[in-house]
Length: 277
Image 1 (cartoon, rainbow, N blue to C red):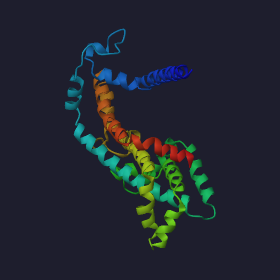
Image 2: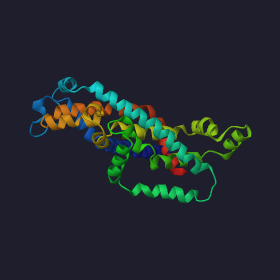
Image 3: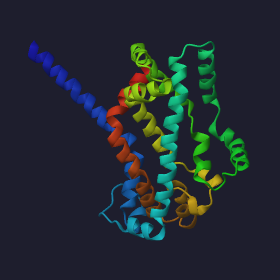
Image 4: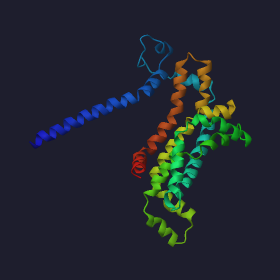
């Protein structure tokens, strides 16, 4: 009887893992196809029926697109935008969430609900207002003008608020008994205890800023484009060369994959903490 139950558990786990592997391959399908196309020679890309796997590995597309585009310049522009976006967003979002989670004042829940209700407004609705604001501040064609409209995200405030609410009140009380200021309690006691939430928000902001496409095109000239916006040059002048477009896109997403691999251990912990509240 014991062996029968153990055999059933093994068979059940086997089917679960098989389904998970199939689902993972299905979800990764677009990226795997893009990677395959980037490694195909030209005749493979336009073959009929379409070839899913390249007949042989060829890095010619990567070499040619790297020589054509000034990747280092666009990557450097992207690094500056991403660094400013991630650091300032973490700072301002955490500072916004802290009083909404810790302080007891009248209207706190109403303010939080008001903030959350703004999430239903599409981002495209704010493009004109953001452009007029940035223009009036003289920040057109600057990296500050790119990151300024996205410094405080309601979603990030929500995640940080839930993380702060999970910290015992004794931590803050001990800091106050030692005479620490509220800002010092926030920075030295509270923030180190919500590292998973910081990692999750940092990952989301890294992805959003690294892949930023439309807003930089509106604000910046072509010399200051980030990598995602600069890839539009390939689509416009070489619309038939899918190999170049695929190779450039793969190069642009590699940093995101590396960052995710470094932060993945905090990802589920941070998300589960936010959901539990």
